[in-house]
Image (cartoon, rainbow, N blue to C red; front, side):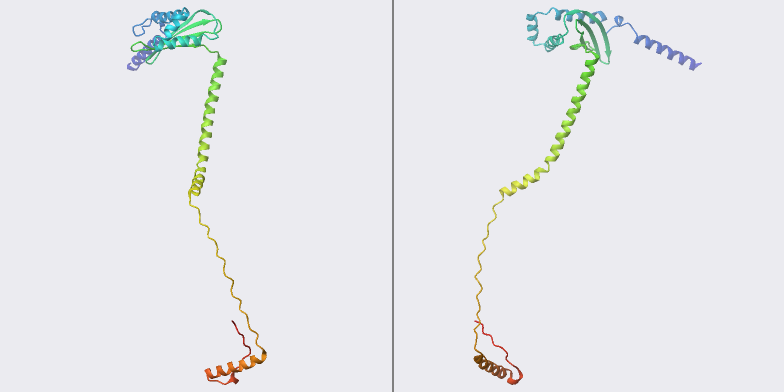
Length: 242
């Protein structure tokens, strides 16, 4: 029994939730503002911009009110190439979290324009007013492709710059060594002193007769100093060095 009651309560809550989600936006209270009041604010803004003279435009741009200046500039940009004003289109109200957005479509000859009011919902303070041309599906796809290509191009450029920076690290030691070599004191040049030519020793040629006499004298001197006989050794040659 309890399970059946819980099931019935759950079904009722789901039905109430679906009913609330599908409620008529013209009957909803938007934190003290009605649907007609929000729509009227957008319609009055469009009427004022359409009827704006050059003098009023100059006065708005010099008013010092940033939101008003942005509104006038955005209106001028949005009117480029759209043609003549035709009528007001659909008006929508959407609440998302703490933000309430009111969008008024403006029909021109070539393409529509959207005027958007952005409110902070809890105090209904106006945060911004934007005006944008409605783009076709082809234009949206083209812009998306361009944004994608631009993003990829930026990524590749950053990668190339990083590669160049990393490659530049190899040049720094080379430049540092070059700077050290440039600032180093010059190495003194040592000149070799030519060596004096070695003296040439000439041998005196002694006649054979003199050699025999000299050999006999030397043999006698050696025998006398060693206490041996001249017969124990033989003097074969005598060389004189000077």
